[in-house]
Length: 363
Image (tube, rainbow, N blue to C red):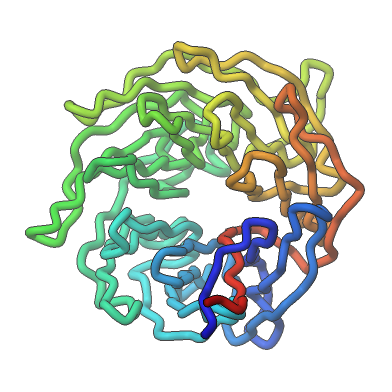
């Protein structure tokens, strides 16, 4: 008979992009961690601007936003042996330009945020077959901040579950606040627990947690900084510890931060700079605070999202405006080193990764 094995040499990489519905918006690539290269396996069209993806590898499901005026979220099954996608269903959001979505640990709830009209955080149930249920809750933000061109109103930019808790964090670029919500599964609603004020004009965008869940790192798009917070898992509150700049001192141009991730070991943190077109590397000290290590060119323009392979050996960077995904190997000092390997693809903006499943003969 045959049995299914996980081969950790090979990884499926799903890419989200800005594209029209008649072009391939979500691509399926295969990453070979020994050769360090990417190749195309498959892809799907029929969805406009699937700019952000969320992956549930345990249940073989993928979720995508449709970042358009009449925003929506879509769900897909992942074929366990080929990685190919099959759409299950879609649900409209109560706003425009949904730009981020994520899942709770159990895969029962889908969270999304509308960046433009509506400016809200939304909660959808996920049915047993992976279909997205009807909208369970919608919480609108209000307010503004000091930069008139980018902060004229609220712009929630991501929603991230706090590990091993019922809380989730929502950085709002427009109001310069981080909102802390609790998912009340009994009432199927989002309850505001607290909010943390960022530096005026900072523009909080994305969040990464340390593996020990004691520290949260928030990257700010507008002032190119990362804030370090300690997290109290009993009270569900954040306390500011440090703020560091993401750009090299000699850089004098215009740049905006995008993505942020912590290495699987918890020893290093990385942030992407769009303009300087670099990955900033920081060492994470025992107290959670950061120490700058260096900056690496992404060998392309406008590095949006990036992913660290689960073994901590590679970083894959999506360069939106140079149509490429660049492969970098992580050195012993944590600094990414371009390998010379890249993959040409139109406007990549989001990457998600899971082990490739292969069939092999077994007893």
